[in-house]
Length: 309
Ligand SMILES: Nc1ncnc2c1ncn2[C@@H]1O[C@H](COP(=O)(O)OP(=O)(O)O)[C@@H](O)[C@H]1O
Ligand SMILES: [Mg+2]
Image 1 (cartoon, rainbow, N blue to C red):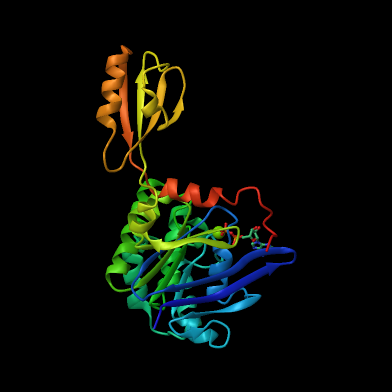
Image 2: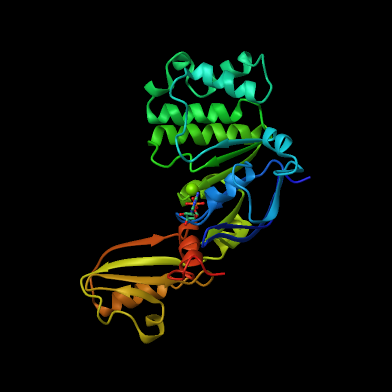
């Protein structure tokens, strides 16, 4: 059984076709990345998984439970950390976690609540009113809330947007720990380095359409190009014609050249520069990352109407 199955899901908001037939299977125990620029439809897809929004067409199940037909069971299998910091301001942290436990029919959940508070460094805020918490603490509170019923699948919707470096590190560690314990993690983010560091498999959606679904390695391999940037006293006629075809950009001081993956034309380039008499001031090589793949994949549809079919 898959942790999550998404089968040809469409979503219309009035005239906006926000999801255009998304299909996706996420295996149990995977650390899965759902990437896409703002407005791609990531949060909409997550709301459908959580049963908060209904798909216009298609179906979704969580741990084998259809999110509409078997709402209670599917909801029990899923913990969702929402993108927005939504919370009820009139309760303390512990009260909110108890309420959430009650919602899942768990009456004596204090041991687990204490463990969550401890793990998320919130123990000393247990009795504080949620309103008094800093943004980072609220974020951690929402994670505790998502985990209160020990769901096998945890979905984090942009958990590190606007979060400081230290908290980001803590959240990563927490997610990795849950993953090592066997949880399925779905992470939505538009920080590419985050997905690159954590996720095993990645889907990229853009304007409601899936533009890539692959392992991280396979995605990175799509962009084998390395770039050499040379800072020179003169960039005019340093290269022979045979190397000119690899030039990506040039201004009066900098020359950016595509490097061959296999042969490595670095030697040729450098000796050409040397014999041209131009002075080499600096150089660096840029390794491609998910960022380049992402830009390439999401660029292709740029400018199209998002209401297209
Ligand atoms: N409740 C809603 N009503 C109308 N349009 C919405 C609603 N929620 C999202 N949208 C629109 O659907 C598209 C996808 O939004 P969203 O799922 O939030 O994207 P993402 O999370 O990838 O940034 C956007 O164009 C957004 O404006
Ligand atoms: Mg979103």
